[in-house]
Image (tube, rainbow, N blue to C red; front, side, top):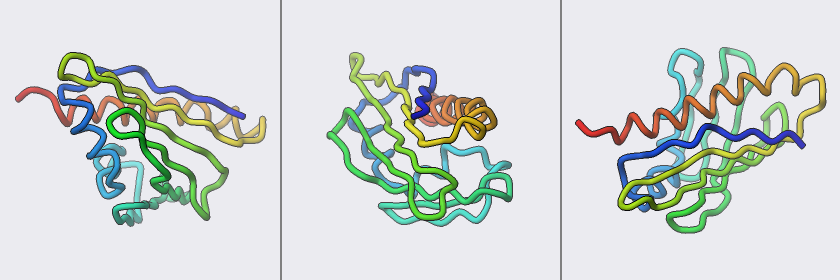
Length: 135
């Protein structure tokens, strides 16, 4: 099992606000690099998109513990099965958070995708920071 954590970030919003945002799958598009995804589709509970015109990724909201964790799982068509969790903790009115992925990837594919996935999760975490940055 491949495990990948994003960098920890501090988000200028309460963990309640961040939890609500991440629980609506329509919002995930705002965390992804626009120039690397296409064919975006979403509703409140799932989303799918192509990465750089190749792999289709399907992501579903699985469960959540209010204000502390949002769990997602891979859907049909994804190149491998995985879970993704957004961990959130209150830090005096702001939120410390990070993404944790556990993926069932064969060793050869792991060598190819682990670095890009780490970069993607770091990017997504940073987009959360940017979204709630003080104006």
